[in-house]
Length: 369
Image 1 (cartoon, rainbow, N blue to C red):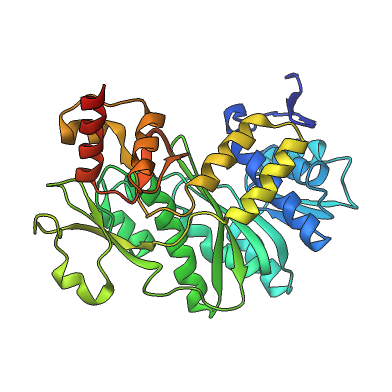
Image 2: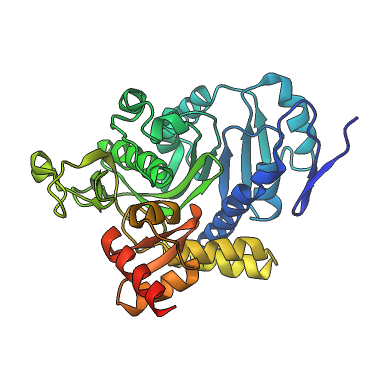
């Protein structure tokens, strides 16, 4: 028998299932958000669509104080392990099933059953479960969705993105953020079809995985300002956001070269800074310093444009050696530009300065030194 695994406050068996300890940070964020929701609303019913060993379901119950968790795993070979791990919760606080996620969500929808928190952690394209999440989430509830298909969001297979998301993705230096915005864009567009809306709570890129959490709202939130196209100029390295009405005139204002367009995708905020603040306070209370550090970075980047500049790209464009990242951020802020680290890539910055303005500031730092 394999030894028991432990993650935060829970222990569990892996059995024949798959468990990745390094993904703990992703589950930490979900548990914190669920706990904040429970504290705000006084109740928490969770649907965990792809439970595997059940570690998420256990943590939602023990740490987020969920009233009820439906733990579903589509692989019937894992069902016994899942039941054993959740045995202390059955039948009063949990239900275990082994169903296709689509079938489960359809059955719950037909039964009129809606959940406060829906977590569907799947491999591949996130678009395949967007409709399911919308069907079983109550108004005001939270949806936690996943995409792991890097070839789609990175622009390497734009036709696949068109088939799966109804969007055409192109390659540029901040494609990791593009993955988050592609999934959010599909979510807000499908919600709008139902005359509903979404509010992003947080968007997290980790490894090759895009994870987004959003609140379902009773009014549509999609507009031509928050859902559209991101343009990149391969000639000068700048980003621009052409409006829907000016797509035919999408050229770089810096050098008049045509922009490479990706879209349509979500162009609004990636995070709700106030909600992140509550998550961070809870993480401090629970003594999770690594999560506090992450949430602090996510809060600082929440007000910035929908792209970032990798330091490597800045160095290549300017053909110069770069100062330490913190020194560059301070120099940008001294020149009245907004600037921040980004959680998406450690060696990158978010700023409202152009590539040419960043390079000029670095050259000035070099002259001073």
